[in-house]
Length: 247
Image (cartoon, rainbow, N blue to C red; front, top):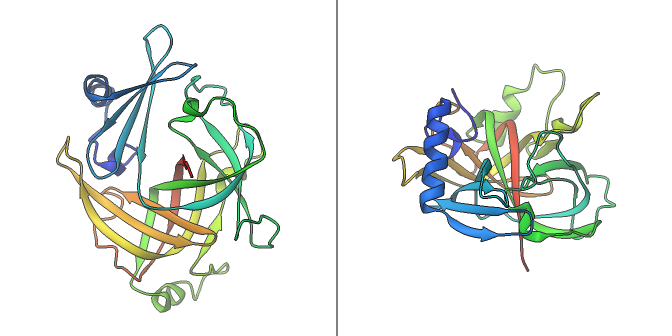
């Protein structure tokens, strides 16, 4: 079954598998100390990252995956969301997409993402405009060879989407906390199969241009077992993880 770990080549399907990845991060990860605790950053090649969390008493309290790709996305951080079940080393932000440094355009939209290295930044004054590297872990993913094929696929649908569209589905909750989920479509600028150096398992990567900016998309073979063509269109639902890019 697909999950955020399998999307970047870690074969995690049980608690034992999860513990094995945590042990790998503990043994090989680079220690990053913060006021809230310690991250151990383990890398498995080509941007694949695992962020193991340890509190100030050196107890493991969490683990998050990330893929550090080449996307760059301009956003304005507007609010920090404190998860009721998260650890002190987790991070979640509500943002608005910025177009040419502005958020006033009619196409601007809000969304939420998780940040695997939140505590590195200490106190963050809000609102604040930043550049992020944004990765979308695919839950569902469809691929079309070109825009014409994409529009033809939608011809009998009541609601039709543009080739570049972004819907922050994680914000559509009546109760509880907003989620870091989105549905979007976009054009494929680059794509490749990437192999996790720790497991030897390959997965999809694509750099996708959507409304507002570029996003790195990752997906395992169970989610999609076909090529992602450059110049094609992707459409799907995704979990969002991002890191601030220091200027």
